[in-house]
Amino acid sequence: MRNTVTESAEQPASSDSATTTTDAPVTRAEYCAIAVADAFAGDGEFIASAFGTIPAIGVRLARLTVAPDLLLTDGEARFVSGSWQIGADPHATEGVVVEGWSPFRTIFDLVWHGKRHVMMIPTQIDGHGNTNISAIGDYARPKVQLVGVRGAPGNSVCHPTSYWVPNHSARVFVPAVDMVSGVGTDNARAAGPAASAYHALRRVVTNLAVLDFGGPDGAMRLLSLHPGVTLEQFRAATGCDVHVEGEVPATREPSAEELRLIREVIDPRSLRDREIPG
Image 1 (tube, rainbow, N blue to C red):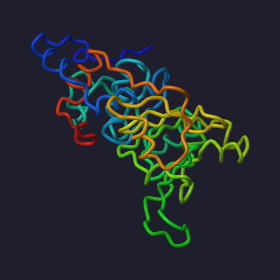
Image 2 (image 1 turned 90 degrees about the vertical axis):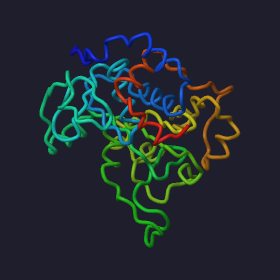
Image 3 (image 1 turned 45 degrees about the horizontal axis):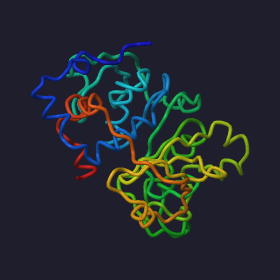
Image 4 (image 1 turned 135 degrees about the vertical axis):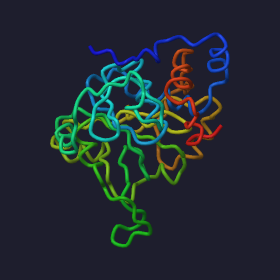
């Protein structure tokens, strides 16, 4: 197993720095980053593709803690080890080493082979994980044209797929998506082995909660609520059915070391708070 933790990540903070960075209250953005890291826990040598600031923080935290063999890119065509700040040039960061070359054409090999875990941002998602990033409204005459299906169909049927929703609302969590871009558990099952054999929806992390698809027949299930969020607030902001089992726990507290890594190593400029204020 290769060592992906750089010296800068391993060095303990000074006592003054520790008081400043790890004793401050945990923010909502940090709970979200912890939940993202947990979504990648135990992944082996998978390429981690994460869209959004919080997911980018989460996958770097995962590699420094619960998933040391994750493969991260420099945003272009090279796999790199080590850790670097969000928004910084990895090649200008001490300890970051180029480990491999990954030109654009190889991404398809990784997708088809299943050696990738992607976290995408859906415009709409329903209670079985079907997602829409293509168009809002009737497909023949949509009200809003979005980005198209992009890689969502292949991602969702070929390798692990998770979702990040920075603004949890009934406009995102809908009874039925206007167009299926990413395949949900019901549609994968109905399509047969070609779609279901490697279909693996892992987690949905939002600014309110953490969900998976462990409900009946692959239904979306509520795993935890972030501290300060009530079940009533969650239900009011959710326009699709979500399976709830008993008393819902709070999203886990980060450790002092996880907070240090987020606040000092990965995101010292607190860009996370721009995506999730408060």
